[in-house]
Length: 400
Image (cartoon, rainbow, N blue to C red; front, side):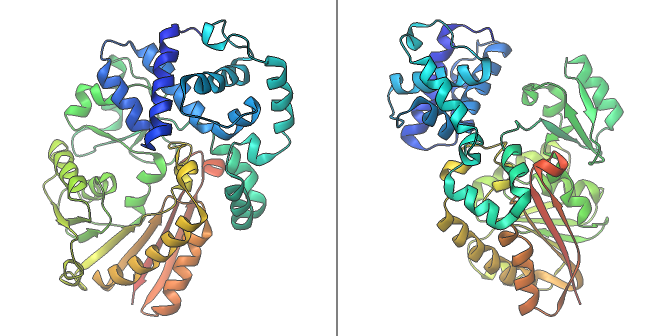
């Protein structure tokens, strides 16, 4: 791996800021890139990869280093040296890495490989919870959490088609392959900053993982329907829903965050979609006004994010067993309150990006037990280990 020593300084600075503030690592990397616009693609790629790997293997690195992490440059230099040793089999001859006990690191690393929670670098409580939830499947999923996620884009079929966009992207030096699972999905063969491309600015595609792209088709939407995306966020799935409806009908995007809804407005204007209406959820009345008014209601609820840890590795260091318990309670409350928006004969779609049945099948079973007016039609489970996608769960329930 070739790099300039000053890049180690950048990686160190990002990790120190992460340790001190707890901000998400992708935000810190993006902030560093904005402040250093003259950096080339290779330098940016090195910084991102090194930083993500450090966060991804955080517990393993400190175990091999034989010390507790502290928010000091010398401390971070130690774990970066260990990371080089593990990934590249040697430590670069930099003054920041001088005098380190390499033989001790090698010995501790070999010892760590026999312990799954250390080998895969996950908190011990999360390893135990994963076993309890997934049994023998957890071993493969824990390993898959550390596989870097590919960049996948969804082609806006209102403006172009897969073949045309692939050709345009190839002219920009961006090579893609068609997704095996998502009809409008293209997978980049190499990571690129696609947000700077003219095709993105023209609204011809959005960045969206394959699993996420399967939600809108799962909803069985049709042109002319009235659809509510009740936990819309910035609206990746909302946009896809409107596209499948061929921009005919009405899509109401709801969220508690006005900032996210404003971002959605910018996105749907860029994509040439005009059937989306945004509504901020302030009180229960905002939900009650839409009672029995929708052909489809999507609930992509707040969850543990365990299915996207490969994409957001710092999630596993922020998550706790207590937080999962609170999330399950919130998910059940959302299911109960928001399901009232589905009209008789309509369908409710419950979705999470969690791997754990406690947030998925068990929540649906709990809901159906207390709401006999709904019937489970089908459900779908995607995981990094089984499908190579983000972890996602979807259930489609029909209101009788």
